[in-house]
Length: 93
Image (cartoon, rainbow, N blue to C red; front, side, top):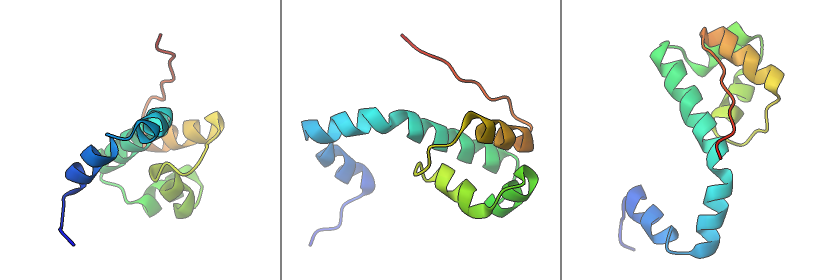
């Protein structure tokens, strides 16, 4: 079996129309996850530290960062407050 990088693997996957459609549909969740991870790292916090500040558990932060959760606006607001960040939601046309 040949070793390939993730970028190479992703390029192969993107040739599949069904995969591209699913990836496009999930993009907002991945954008949220990337944004949260970047903000947490910028604040030099671990998931556990952020969870304590947001009065939640580390598993909830992990699910959010792993894009495997459908968080409420209230939960996102709580995490944003814990980060000292502004939560912005918008509709792009």
